[in-house]
Image (cartoon, rainbow, N blue to C red; front, side, top):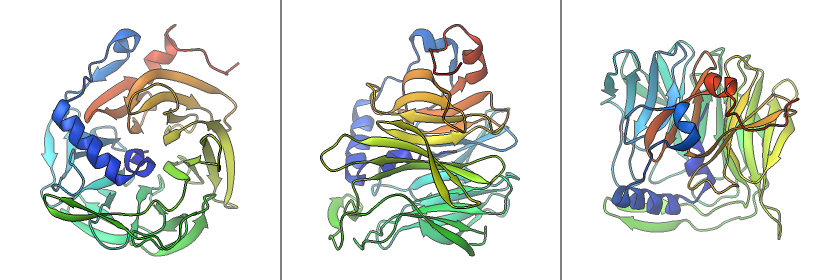
Length: 347
């Protein structure tokens, strides 16, 4: 799912504020043109971010577009059938990730704090209309079997060295286990950088490592997690790795290597992992690829999407994504069945 979390996780928060301001001031052309127009549908939903498909396929959850530190946003539920938007008035803040519970009654979200350590991981109850903080972290996703939530955490905003980990917790926040990620922090004891914005002072944490976390998603059987990490070797070119974490032994298995991989999303049928690669000339986002769970067959599905997040429909036939704070839907089944599908490494 994604999440993408990607936009915030892959770049400095300061740069994101600048980009957000620029986009609002200048606007972006998000019209679909060329060969992709036959497979991509514009929903007309804007300005919104991080769309995530509900487990039953009837809704999308996303957040209003907002500049970090400048104003609060709300979570929004959109009914695909009657095209009705419901802004959740009891939610307010800036959100970095959204994930549905399997029964569709709750969301787990990451709510950015302007001060203090980490960000709140909150469970939002859509029926009771209330949210509860269960942990701190940078991103969170609900397991398809409903038993656990995976939380990614990095060094805290105070500049402490910290650890890059995935915590597996129960929905009430009870810690089940902690898994260290193959990321090595390189900065210790740095001082947070203050930045003045209209609403007051907003702290930008020091970047603790030259490595970047690019998002994660559960396998449909809840036994594995796919995650993206971009490594920055000293004096070398960035290397993006797509890993599969096997929860039976906590081993990380690299399946795809490229320049800038982010926003992995595992298809509900378990056959395919979608991800974005920003190492090509694709504007602010990246090209959309599909691979199998072993990384043996990789396919460029759509080029130059400038997408920032990916989420599969429950039937594994469509992907919803955000481009320039506008939400689009890509018909994967139709594209794969067409002669317009780009060449791949598949036999």
